[in-house]
Length: 313
Image (cartoon, rainbow, N blue to C red):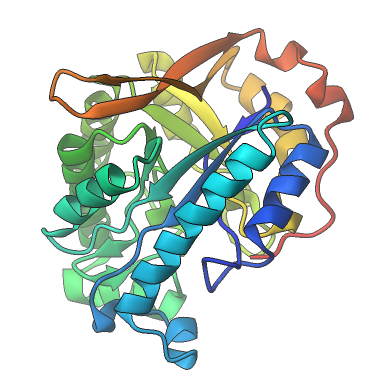
């Protein structure tokens, strides 16, 4: 403690900033003991490239090579800084089509990754957290805002059931461009279903501080307060993530977390730690174990925790 299980760098993500080593060095400077390096997995179709990737004439093959380079550099840094910080190496999912699940399984096995951050960024192939214009396109294709949100939570449910990700990323990122959306009965049923699905195998649900970015309309971390209340009442395991996209984001908003989460009577948190490789009931390799931190707000980190100067996203 303290920890963050979700991060990116400009070296391997074109909408981020700084090198991976600079991000790691900043995490050490801030005082993190455990830090997750969870770069976006590659996207395998040209139609899924983002604008900044197209501008650099990148191809899906380039993204695959970039991810391979990420793992190599992450391993190097893991060894280089092993006496200063516990670095976990994983990926953040991109669930775009049915074959995405097999691609993720292959990547995790091929690279012997420690864990997965299970996130949904697309609904029926359209990015829902990249720009307001693309979100509007997803709404139009789905037939309405409630409809696209229903599809989002259905995609998330499939992700949870198929992959059992160790960390469930920004649970309700679908709210990014509609922060005041009402949770209708049908939406809430899907949210409860997804929480129960994650709890069934011990998933960690992240409090993702990127939601509090001044560039977003949310002004507080993901997920929505009502969802936090549900998670706490259900006994779900909560973890913390800064979702950094550069050194300026490392530890962003952490100084506000004790007060924010005290509102919901959160007194314990969970994090991932490296462990001896074992196989789970489905025969999948497990390289990490979740550990509980009680009296988490008593840690001296919070007394010296300072909010970062800028937010790069």
